[in-house]
Image (cartoon, rainbow, N blue to C red; front, side, top):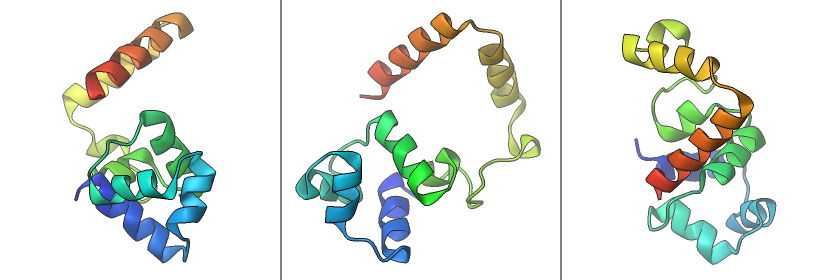
Length: 107
């Protein structure tokens, strides 16, 4: 399931309007509507805001799992577990650089 389906379903299940979510995210309703249609990529920071707003995991929003709480350790592949362990060894500065690099790649 694509990310835009999840955020639309979450919004509708919460009986919220696009205007309310746009206000929360600090964007226009027109631009938020593009997220739900899949016509604009959701910046990582805004995806985090939505996950917090709906009290769900980013994994759920991204469609990686159907569990609103996210992936359990047992659901991760060996490569995913290795990557998480590697990230855990990085300094805060290195994590910030990695976040920046990932945001550039995701654009």
